[in-house]
Image (spheres, rainbow, N blue to C red):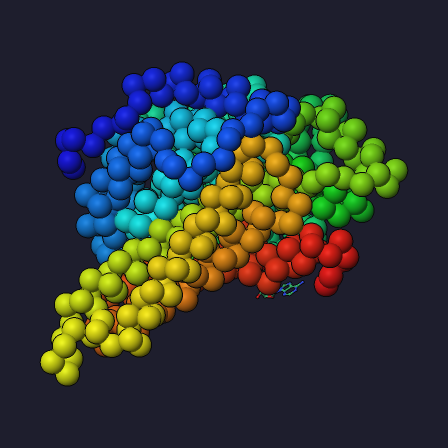
Length: 435
Ligand SMILES: Cc1cc2nc3c(=O)[nH]c(=O)nc-3n(C[C@H](O)[C@H](O)[C@H](O)COP(=O)(O)OP(=O)(O)OC[C@H]3O[C@@H](n4cnc5c(N)ncnc54)[C@H](O)[C@@H]3O)c2cc1C
């Protein structure tokens, strides 16, 4: 590994505390940042640093881990060693009041490779789950455990989806029952397609505590390391993102202390009482997490799209047919122009939503969903165009655009399919319950 790749911040731990303060400030709505598209020196330094890691460590390993379909632990460890994987770095990225650093980091990493990128960043979904529903104390207790240590890094998992509840998260069957005698929660059910499911140190599980209330009767729970009753089910064989582990998770009389309910019981009881009275809820456990994470997920898709675009651009300049470089044909050059245009447009939507999210602006027109929808669809389209520009080579595993295309496809499916994003946007703009 390149010895020059080091964390730009020597004060990463202080940044962790700053992030907790920042989180509280954001929750209170008493902090805003002026909007500017000019990146600060800090932002540029972080981007270069992550790009260096993506280029020097991630990209050379991409094809191998895609073929192996295994979690690339040595690369996660490398990321932990340089300070890119861990609570401190996430806190540092999050602390940026413009909100741009976190998506920028994701774009660079996924430019390197999406499968490995997800193996490194998959944990942030669990962290987002804790962040959106947990108290500052719970954040401090569980988030570091999602990451483990530099010597022994761990991963986290966020488990919402079930075999019969994908897009329709209101119909979760996993139940959490409070046992008054032992002051424990008892969870039963099956989770599906969980990133890092079963191999995570910390699982964040969304379960129904009052089935009658649908999504409003759900809550999120932390399942601590080595808790009995949590088992990994089948590991899923996938089309893309193959270096990222995806599996079912079974919860069989899985008991956790009362303190593992994110947000605490008092808050839950109040929320349930309001729901029973029919008072309109602001948000639900799973939805809160998805709202917060959608722009970041969009940034990952942009990283893949940009990688494919850059590869295709270079190839089109090199490849000769009919006595000239293929880029000299408008059909190719215009495609590349459109690819660049679409990628930049998607990034602007992602940055807008990230800025809004970080500065506590409500997504009144579902701007978070817009950003993820656009970025996911651009990634699928741009990687498909890249294959076309590479011709036969593009279709082979000798060239990376084929893998990028496979990796891109998930971005129109997970964290809400494209159809669900359109549903969310159309409901937001119309105020109607579009079905
Ligand atoms: C690689 C991978 C990683 C994942 N990681 C996680 C994870 O970490 N945690 C987690 O909880 N889940 C995870 N998931 C699950 C993922 O979020 C779901 O697959 C996704 O939400 C879609 O649900 P579904 O697959 O059940 O599709 P379905 O809900 O069955 O949808 C099937 C089709 O019907 C469409 N559809 C459904 N309802 C409507 C509607 N009302 N209007 C129009 N169209 C509709 C959908 O858009 C889709 O095209 C992951 C999935 C994969 C493949």
